[in-house]
Length: 377
Image (cartoon, rainbow, N blue to C red; front, top):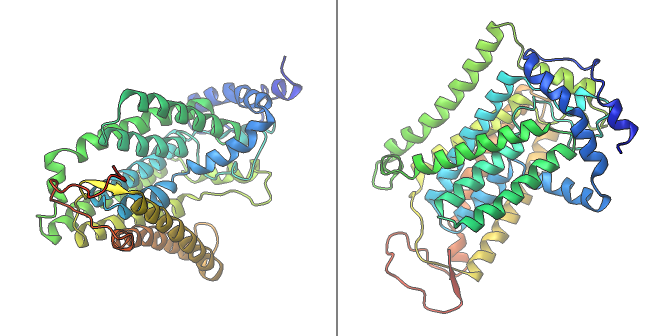
């Protein structure tokens, strides 16, 4: 029924176990499921899964979703999304350090590898699935989506989880835990950031200093949680960065491991710093009314151009100033990149309505569109 590679995967006696034997004993039992998933996936679906797993990358929240919202003059929604994403992403890093869950590709040589497989961090829970569910659930709850939208959304989540299992990056349990954690962040972020008290923290009526301190406190709490967790684990005799050793030993890709802890954490902290600057500098209100197709097209073009330009700047910066994985200069470049993506998305995004010939109305909800070719957002 199953190929020999499936049964070979059952023998994981040679795999290194992490500090939490219970977690990794469960993962060892899941290796055959990963191999069976890879073996039973039809060829026509393979390329779809490889593309889809890249489209649910956590960076998409900052490179695509948030800039699009800024371009559509939904500044408060975009700012809340960035703050929630940054918090959830750093929480994912803390969870991975605490649980120290192995990844399939370093637990067994029977697992097939892809260029995006060899991530350097621990695997519990999946960062891709958690980020996708955090952002999507937050937007669904905030927009008051109907039940069919949630049912369709579940299909995309399952497909994302399947893609992470298929590429050998995660075990099934890691994607299920990520789904639960992401749903909690999405719903909790909606309730918290949508409350009158939280909204008043970043309200345009408040002073710049108060908005700055409110958003900066989120970044400071996240930084404190990451640093304290790292130090506590070291004090307990556990090395949070041991995952890199396992990744180097198990990776068969010519590109080597990707996704280093300090660079990823510093980029997310840079994102939160950018959100802090935006909260202090820009009016944190959402435009009311309608969005024309011309406005939407201009916002999409803006997102595409910004992604291309910043990706090129990142590659040039790493080529000239990078000093290797988790080097001090590389960490500083990652933080700068995170800050720039949010700050530029807000600054340049505010020009999109004028470029599209639209006038974004922030407060006057009673104004109506003048044509019938516009659609409500």
